[in-house]
Image (cartoon, rainbow, N blue to C red; front, side, top):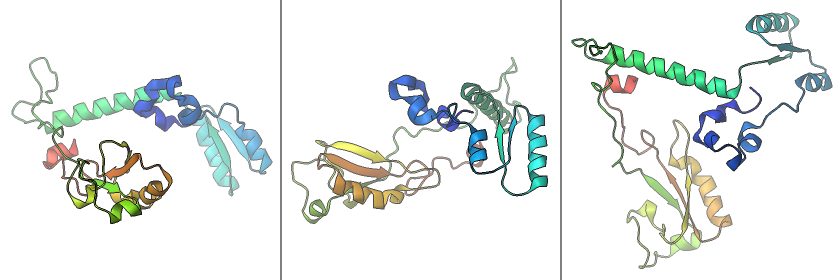
Length: 218
């Protein structure tokens, strides 16, 4: 799909050239020849423009054994995103219909699926656990009385007068994944920066946001 298609699913893709999306996230490969790359390493190469072509190329690669390179031509990034959104929409509609009370069949008189029967998720008032990374000198001295902020021990040293860099973990992770990086940043960045990490909803020390089985499934 001509580069990093996965990034087209992120909000950053909407900003396009304003953030240099193609250069830094899309990373297009149209200037690179996989055929020449395979030749340089003495590897068999084939190009597939359809699913039938791919099956043939894959079968031949298995018969030959060893390393093979198959370049599969797929849909563009925008089409790929649209297809995934449609799949997600249909899956959610199917789950809503299946999980709705059987008494109403999950549909109104017009046949439209009613998702309002499912509990809504509200995390607007939820406070996420935060961890502030301190410089050695800051950690040894108490914070100035003029600084305002959380009073728990993990949040000491956060100042409203500083810029803040928030480190976000990935799926199934937690804020402690950034401990080593956070420490290094406190040593290399100016004192004008707060360095913090958080536990996203449902991760680490954050409370579970989906507790009812049918809502968790959805």
